[in-house]
Length: 112
Image (cartoon, rainbow, N blue to C red; front, side, top):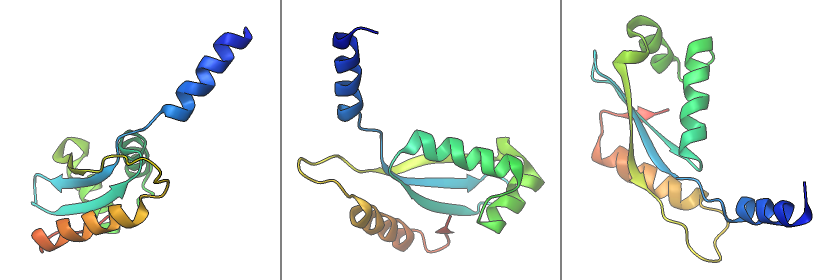
């Protein structure tokens, strides 16, 4: 790989900003809703799907629903997007605030 290509790939890696925000999982069969924060939404969804398939989800209620109704009965949606700001490197607190707002707006929901 030539040096110019290597520099370009490094620049792209530094500038890469994945989607982040609050994700909801809803069991269509029961109406149960779960919220979680994600700094990298696509990676979070992949990880959650893999954990559910292998039976290692931390949230036992969602794991039971997944097992009982299958993947097709569980839908997900990004309910709140968080935009990147210049100079900010840690968005944990901002994501937590968004999560609390979502939970307050949906008292029947729980954390993932």
